[in-house]
Image (cartoon, rainbow, N blue to C red; front, top):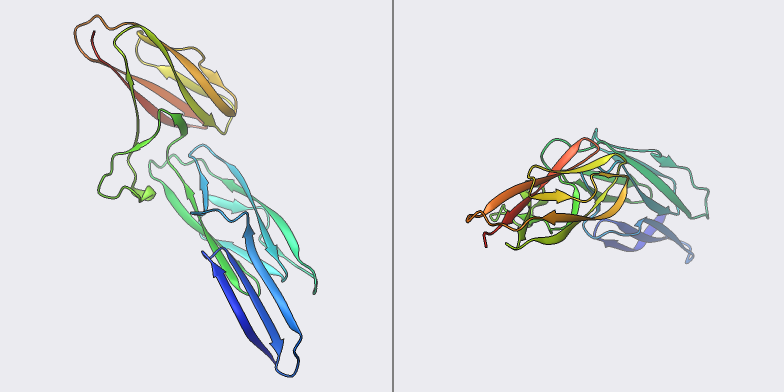
Length: 229
């Protein structure tokens, strides 16, 4: 019969258990953890469809997920006694076009059990201008976030830029105003810095324009505001 000597849990992402038989001072070490451990769990953007993480375990395990938009290529691993495996898991996401951030939990049960949240935003990964959450009543709750991307432009003619990362080929960036045009309109997956060509505002009034970034069927809008000179 075995007895547990020590159990440590770190943010639900890892466990380490030492056990020994009642009549034996030889201890067994059981390891179960995600690697790398990600603060806040796994994060994906709306157009993102793949991600990876490892399970490090000294015991056979099974994985479960309660979301139909999130699947994994491997749901179990058989590990021989005395061995520790580091298993790479490939996750597949459906693009999030629901207009809301969504969260699921993946759980791995082996000698113990660990779980990790997986959050997929409803917005694209626009880096500059920085995202602003206008849901001030719950600023830290990403599942109820109301994200905008405001960009203020000087009245004089100027060139500025936006920066973003898209996770699918065939992304586009468009403008609805002839006074603010994008240098490049079509993009493959990756990080991009795109120049904007903006005319001076001699209209005598503030004017507004919208840039629309679309990737994998999901769009996010950048709100341009230019003051009059």
